[in-house]
Amino acid sequence: FGLSKKHPEPRMFRQPDRLKSSYDAVIIGGGGHGLAAAYYLARDHGMHNVAVLEKGYMGGGNTGRNTTIIRSNYLTPEGVKFYDESVRLWQDLSQDFDLNLFYSTRGHFTLAHTDASVRTMRWRSEVNKHFGIDSELVGADAVQAACPHMDITCGGHAPILGALYHAPGSIARHDAVAWGYGRGADQRGVEIHQQTEVLGITTKAGRVTGVETSRGRISTSRVLCAVAGSTPRLLDMVGLRSPLYIHPLQAMVSEPMKAWLDPIIVSGSLHVYVSQTARGELVMGASLDPYELHSTRSTLDFVEGLAAHMLELFPFLSHVKVVRQWAGMADMTPDFAPIMGKTPIDGFYLDSGWGTWGFKATPVAGKTMAYTVANDRNHELVQDFSLDRFANYALVGEKGAASVGH
Ligand code: FAD
Ligand code: PYC
Image (cartoon, rainbow, N blue to C red; front, top):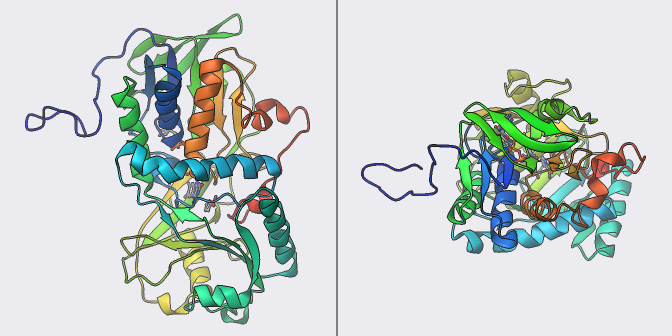
């Protein structure tokens, strides 16, 4: 994406070769969240003297590794309001960026195989409806009608009793989301520095004063930390503690085939979620790896387990090949809700705790964190997700809506 002799203008965004000695704000992490915050800081708050520092390449973290499911059918009023605003923002993004994000609304089924999960689906649908979200509990017949290829008895092991159906459920092209926000930020003067790792954060009298990077020191009074699975390392740099723990989350993709799967299918009990992309590939994921690990290595064990559950739902796929597998580092919280906003260090803001659920939140997290950084005041949608909720026993329990089995 840089300058070449043939293309003197940048095709996507500039690649500045030098860091300035100071910026009005520094964003650590060039994933969707960091880039979205940079975009809205410049577009909505007139803050252009901003640097995004990315230790690898843009979108190379969880943003480029997720299964792209977008939905707002959460369980708590705080979650539902937050994710609903994100789904609203997603609608205009391709237009705003002049870049096709392949945003595709498919409808989203969360399958219930037990009476207990039917109860949770009913609960979610009632909370959703209360906030005007299009969700309903449907019977197994509706699942079969929308997905005739599915064996709704699951080989007799775990018959489907019903599902939570969420019509707005969508998928999108994840790398384009990072590029769209990155290009939009770049066009408004933000500098994006890839291959630039933050190694330290300096503070004085409880205030941020700058960051130490692999390419030199920068002074700044505002730092937004948006590094997902690396958050505990960054928190160590400012002496803050959080209840975050990191588990790998893996995914895989099949060879392309003719379109046969329109809706997004999720089964927490079978540890399966699957959608078919515009290119015909099946994008599939399972639950978290059951151990704490700061690594993006992927395993054969995962492919075997997920393939077995996929075949319970879709036995006809037995000859289809898996062509890629990978992992991301999920920054998990005890209540399955994010940690956002101001922290006890003045000028140090957190956008983290996105675990297995943060891709859908990219637009709203960017917008609300930009507001929070620009005004040094938590946006009202962020307030309930602040770090101090763990000390105040004010958790936002979203485990029942996390999709991914845990
Ligand atoms: P990232 O995209 O991880 O960006 C953080 C960036 O920070 C990285 O690029 C990293 O290199 C950089 N960084 C780290 N340390 C430093 C440092 N010291 N200096 C500079 N840069 C640094 N969510 C959904 O909503 N729907 C889904 O279907 C879904 N599926 C998922 C499937 C998988 C397999 C995984 C792993 C996650 C999934 N998620 C899903 C979660 C979602 O991907 C993440 O929550 C979201 O992408 C987080 O975005 P981010 O920008 O905060 O983090
Ligand atoms: O948050 O919807 C989600 C999700 C699905 C798979 C991983 N995360």
